[in-house]
Image (cartoon, rainbow, N blue to C red; front, side, top):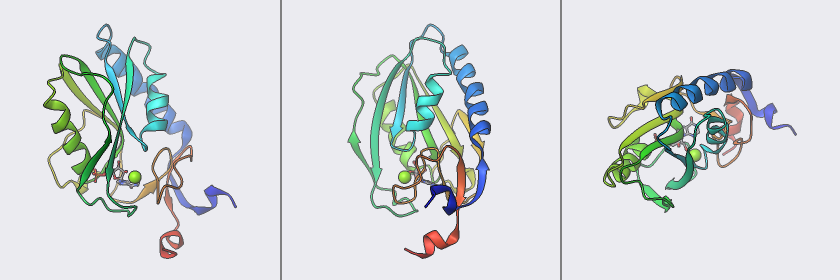
Length: 182
Ligand code: IMP
Ligand code: MG
């Protein structure tokens, strides 16, 4: 049984994703050259994006991770956010770059950015691979968006459905029978 058999349609191929990441990496490297930014990945979804992105930033930087959880395994966010793992580093006076897989309602990242802004970083930049701007419940504008996507549930390249499909190298839409079985 191949994981790709569950995919109805590929939205962004591995090549398209990597090409966009090269552009974003170059942009960030130029903007933060000499500033030793702290690049913060939001686990688990942002792990593949983060890993590829920092390797396209040819500048000194540091990496950290946060684990936040919206309760449950459903396809919809509950709006309740729990910090499972906070940053290892202090961010006061530093340039912080948050790396996310996707912004949907915006609730998760709104909570996270409000929390980090209270620690008075020098700057806070939000980078997301995917953005579903039509589904916002709170005002939240990412600084850099890889791809703007329609209001559809996607998997792959870090994004999961019930913890599955994160390891696909592309972003795609699941066959409807996958949901129907649950
Ligand atoms: P938000 O709080 O609604 O912006 O949702 C953020 C989180 O919901 C993401 O980090 C994902 O874990 C999850 N999520 C939202 N949309 C999708 C999707 O289309 N596929 C997989 N996970 C998603
Ligand atoms: Mg998820």
